[in-house]
Image (tube, rainbow, N blue to C red; front, side, top):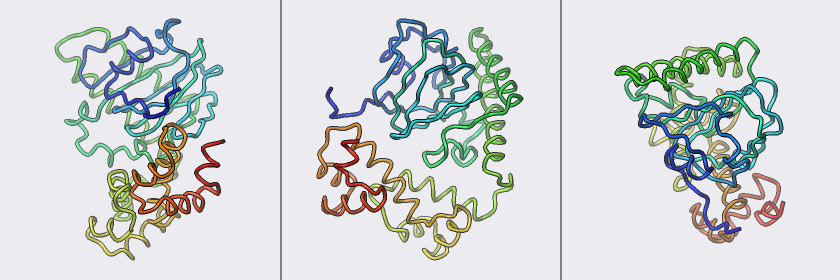
Length: 295
C-alpha cells in the first residue's frame, strides 16, 4: 500500500466516486441519503482520508461497523450521533446491515442563516468530541427531522434549497442543545467562552506555524497571561496544552497514514530539528514517533 499521501475528497461527489456509490446530489454544497441505499457494490471498508465538508451520521443500526477519527476508534452505543469536520483523518468499516442517514454539507450552504458557523455550533470543531450518545427520545426527534429533510431532498421544487437550509439549521440547533447537555454548560456565552471559541478557531488555522501562546494572545488583542488564565478556568487545560494537543493530532495522523519519514514530518510541522519533534511527541504521548508508527 502506498502511504505517501492521505486522500482528500473536497466534495461529496468525489467521496461517492471513491466508495463506488452511484448516488449524486442535485444541490450544491448539500447532500443527504439513507445509509442502507449504499447497497452491496459500495465499499465496506475505507482506508484513511480527509474530506472538505461536514458530515452528520445518525445511525439506527450499527452492527459491526467501526469508525476511526484521528487514529482513535469511536465506540458506538445504542443511539449514536456523530460528526465529521474538515481536516480530520477518517477511516471506517461498514456493516452490510448498517442503517440510518448521512448528511453532508459545506458551511456555505448555511451562510445566510448562520454566517458565524463555527462559533454558533462549537461541536463542529476538531477539538470537540465527535460522538454523542442520544437518549431514545432525542434519537426519535432527530430521526423524524432527518426523514423530513430526506423527503424534501427527493422532491425538487422552487423553494427546496431554502427549506433544506431551514431544516438543517434547526437540526443543528437541536444538536447544540444536546451538546450543551453533554457538556453541562450554560447557553449564554460569557466573555471567557467567546475568547475560548476564538482561540480554538485560531489553533486550527495557526497551529503549524505558531506554537507560542503569545502569538495567539496578540491575534486576540489580549495579554498572554489573561488568555492562559481564561482558557484554564473554562477548559481545565492550559492554552499551551490545547495548541500542543492539536499538533499531536496532526502528528499522529502523519505518522500513521503517510509515508513521510520522521524528519520530513518534523519539518512539515515547523519544528527546527527532528529531535525537537521527537522530544515533543514523547512528552505528549509517552512514546517516540517510531514506536507509535509500529503500533
